[in-house]
Length: 444
Picture 1: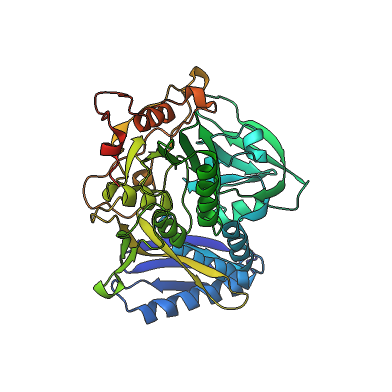
Picture 2: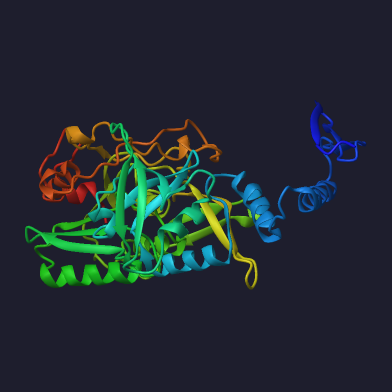
């Protein structure tokens, strides 16, 4: 009597896969998984059910049914595009905490690239920023566990945790031969979506770092405080800094744009059918009373940031300075799946600026391109390659464009794009393309 099992891959044809096996009793069995081309969905679901039962019955170790189903859902959804994803109950709760603006963690915006977690940008004044984490870093291990094979939600969940606990990251950085290991202590991350200050007694600088539930209220407070510090007759205008802002909530992008627009369309979204077209218009009135605006963008400005920049630019409300934006022109709708089942973040539409321009895989080009001087020690660091470089991305309506420079100098005195914005608002000619009259350049 034969006690071993021998598997022989018999044939792989267009009709399916045939496996021959000898059982412990020496009998020969044949399994044939038919994959008919163009089969209806119900037949395919029957096939899934058959595979599921085979795995449950015959896998070398007893599998967890919940993990099997979750893995199947993840495989289906992530095959669609880089931004659709399934969130189990814990991941869904984590996402809600993030959009509300407070959670325990490290303070980094991340994305998945080639199976690894790539840092989009560390948040200002967070443990990650203080530990020297940089845009473009690839996280390969979290507490000794390889990131390869994890979903983005699983990786993020491992980096979150109770405050005052430690996590160890191993990262790869272009230009550095050996992996970098860093230990970071978790803190309560209170995402401050808006920071601001006055500059030279005549300009208000406002940085928007994310679009969460607190963004619009924080922006309006910043404008009110700047108006108290600088008399209207002396206020030359505002610089709105959207660089390395990865986006967030669509309704916040609309309300932020509305803060600077008296009227007009902010963005439209278009799905599979004409009935799924939606238009969002400015509401509430211009809180800046028509003062000139300059918006800073770069290769890390994505999604909601691009909605705001596109709306203000198309309405000739602001001039754009910096480098081409990321190019994420799709909308993800979060669909709760019932108690304890988590939620689905599904790409349901593309969005278009008021002029009808889709930025998907193209980005937004600034009116005035300003490249930063990158320090020698960072010149080998990879830049964000933009939406067009992401595997499985939605195609562009036209020629696709890769990403652009996303480096922002930590010291404002070295920030060439910011200096150009200040000069523009003060009527100083920054280069041949910069008009000398900022009010003419930024119509109300």
